[in-house]
Image (cartoon, rainbow, N blue to C red):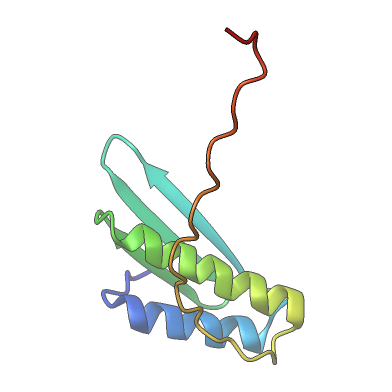
Length: 103
């Protein structure tokens, strides 16, 4: 099992693998706190893809991969995956007054 260095290459090959065999493909995330390393593994028992990182910004990429896989699982392997555009934060509601005793 060889680690793939490029995130984009790993993600593209993982999606292709899932589309080819959606029932037999699975992925595992493993985080080692003592090393601060995150390892992602996607396999279909014939091919195994692995990606290792220790960068915090790669956690967002992992979340994006989860969303892609959840979309493919829910809508089927032929579904078109559209990257979501981040929306600006919505303004928060003003705090409500407490219901305690009036003074």
